[in-house]
Image (cartoon, rainbow, N blue to C red; front, side, top):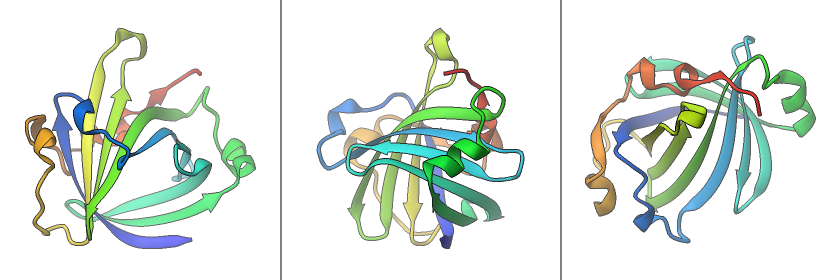
Length: 165
């Protein structure tokens, strides 16, 4: 079990700047499922670690700061607590990098409208402290539309929809 404060700022991007995605970035395919029991269940298939499963509960402490309780679980527990046909879920492709101590960039590419082909790209910056100063990698700087930290309409929970895989 892991329970820790999460300090995270979020930014809406124009596109995924594929030119910066190199071997130093970890690629993960994620499906997040929101169970009415208050837990988020995640299936993560990473190029580095393979298939892993988690359950997480977050509660807001302050703008950009959440209390995060997370457990690594088995595939069986994931399957027992999720129903992709009837629960809110969202798939995303994530690229992650830790360029410096205390900073992690997660670049999430969502296909929010299925066959309509509409993409949504969100950058999450995890920091040791929410007020910590940091610099974006240069190619990311040109892609930032605006900061969306605390904007509930851009939360993964609110972006999730009923999906059929």
